[in-house]
Image (tube, rainbow, N blue to C red; front, side):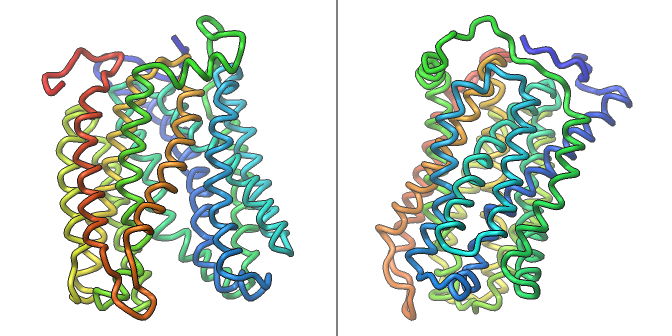
Length: 419
């Protein structure tokens, strides 16, 4: 088993005051760096008009810049997986953090489209592995009794990025040029890396049970039945979510009576509600178990997908709360799914598993967006058609995830009745 000397493994799950304080600082470092990576990933899309004008590129070239991050993250996840259980987790995390910041700074320095494309590839490659390692460290450093809350706090960085990071980045970009957000993120990230290097527990991955051939280890990681079930669960959740989410803005403007100037309020509302819900759901996971909480959230998420994709012209007053509930439900179900999955993975395999899992997430997100794009039509000055069909398919995939979740058994818990 992996040693985590900074954690009090008491059966009560109530940490001593000094341990609780150190765990809080660990979470702060991980969540803050996760925030940097998320804003870097999200900020490119709203900066699109400036990039098109300044770099002289068209919409198709811009789409390549956007997709370069996701594609690189997926490839890097598979390439890094054979090695992440062979080096200390902390060392790998610090290296990936520095690589992420270097790529972010390179984005700000890019003066042409090819250079920006290359910088996004570097950022995505390190960023995908970086997020996977953060979740692996949470699983290593926090016992099951507190792992749900820790996962919820880490994943609440997405809500903070939506509410504060992206809007502030847009303001910086409009006032000082599109390069300013990237330079700011890189500058803010350096002291956070130093903090992480200081507070993260020195958890070493054990050598026993790990094949000498790294690619054989990767094959074992992908082929293990428990891992395949976890990958399938995450893929289904991501396909369901990303077949709907990328088209919400277009549908709200084309069908629901929301203006383009009102759209930021929709996503800020969703981020605020997710900011409240994810830590709360993490606490519920610690108290009632990830499986039980997941079963409660999934029907809400599926129902909101159907409702949101069939909204008539109701305006911002109704559309914003509906979108907020869906975003919060989607974020909450990911907290519960990851808490459930991490408890089912052997510590010696967590690094490689989380790296492949990150790759699966990015690939499935792209597949979901592609699937939704093949079904919807219109939206450019006319109503968006067939969005309701996408919502039904997404809801079906979400409900089907209940069956897969029931097949995942935590290593440190007895089988539950709902299996």
